[in-house]
Structure formats: structure tokens, C-alpha cells
Image (cartoon, rainbow, N blue to C red; front, top):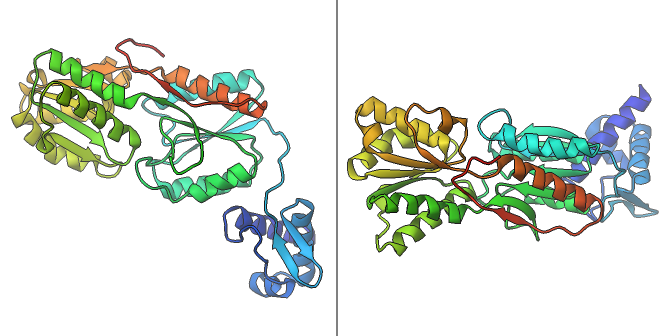
Length: 348
């Protein structure tokens, strides 16, 4: 029981160091203070501190106290790679995850999967837990990458702990020299809009996601294509939505767009299906009259009762490349980021 108690306290203090409650160089409370605060005996506190000292997380200075060390110790190789995405079992994610796992498993690594639901609170909880788990690296799809991220401090802790991170789909520019594998979303937005322009459309609406950087870049490409065609971007033709308010924004905005526009560039296939549903609900002729174009070329696009064009990116390939970059980093090789093109081909 006594052993369990000091291990329990060591886990608690380790977690607080990893998550920034106690920072580099900071003095820990005294043994007496920790005993009073936690309810453990002073002997239990002393043993817990000894565990952290052996791990290299804290240093005792005689006559002064116990201080958090500057850098976390290098971890032993575990062959575990954490994979953190916004979602796991739906839409394009199974293909991406399959590509990651294919490479990792072939090289003797195990994937530890987590999903944030595209919420920064969940991301922080997952990152804090992973800091305490035996992992060699992380492959991460950033959460709400268009917004300032409140979890940068935890990502910096992974860097200090010599745990590399490879980002997919988006990344956080506040991090120093992040390694990422992403699609060329600006070019994709331009390609999609050009397709509609070449079919004679001039009043082209756009629906974009405001809390992920992909939405901003696709909007930039859409705007560029219209500008190159001599068409002014009309704010009234553009809808912005977030993870939380997508349905409400589409329900209120689609009737307005379809009265004014002949084509809609949609952020992805999920949005496109929702648009088709709303068009059917309001006017059975509109699904055939309004031309739609989208991104991801998912099963949603292939199985849709009303056909629409959806640009493809190599989903499984993206996952494989991210995993290969992670393995290269772990082997001591220098890696760089890569931007993958969109196309009209059905490629995996």
C-alpha cells in the first residue's frame, strides 16, 4: 500500500511538471507543504520526490529545495506512435489512418489512436495524457488550425522531451519549424472555381470552414480564380461556418445563396450532401439547376444520388508519407514538409 501511495504521488507530480503546473527551474513546495496539500505522509512525499529525481525530472539542492529540471530526460524506445486526429471512424479518416498504420506496422510500430472532435479542450486532455505515456512520436491533425491554439505549450513540452511531431492536413504556425503533410488547399480552391468558371458560371457561391486553415486557403484560391476572371468577390455569396454551427449556418444561408447563384463551391463532401438535402427540401428542381463542386472525393460523393464533381487528394498516400517522415525522424534523418496536389482523379 505504501509503495502504491508514493507511486501515485509521483504520477501526480510528474503530470503537473509535464503540463506546466511546475515549470523549468521552478522550486517545488517543501516536503511538509506537499504532505499538507496532498494528505500523504512526509515519508511518502520523500519517496515520490526520489522517483522523480532518479528520472531526471527534479533536482535537490541541499539547503535550498527541490527544483524542476530544464529538460525532460530522453525516453526509451517504445515503438508506440500516438496518432491524434479530429475524428477516426468516419468520412476520409479511415483511409488516412490505414495509410499511417500500414507503414508503422510494417516497421514494428503500434498506433495509439485518439480523436479530439476538433475541440481544443479535448486536444489538451489528450496531449496531457500522452506526455505521460510511453510513445516515441506523434502524428497529429491539428484542431481548429485557423485559430490561435491554446495548447502550444504542451506541443513545446513534446519537443523538450525529444518526442517528434508530424502534422497532417494542417499545422500550427506558432510552432517553430513544424513538419507537416498537407494538401495544396489554395491551389485546390482555384482549380475548383476555375472548373465552374469554364462551364460558364459567374455567380459562384462559396461555403468555407472558418476554424480550420484549410477553409481559409480554399477561400483564397476561390477568390484568386474569380479575380483572374475579372469577377469581384461578393461577400453575400460566401458562407463561413465552424465545427459547432455548420447545420445552422447552412439551414439559414442556402436558400439565400440559391436565389442568387448558379453554382456553389463547397468546403467538402459532407457540406455538399447537406446542401443537396436542403435544395431538395426547398425546391425539387434546384439540385439539378445548381451546380456543385467539392473536395475529398469521398464515398459521399461517389454514392450521392445527385452527381457532383469532387476533387481528390491522396488520402492513404498522405497517411503513408506522414508515417514515413516520422520513422525517418526517429532514425535521425532530417525531414521537410510536403504539400500534395489536388486532382480530378480518384487516387488513394
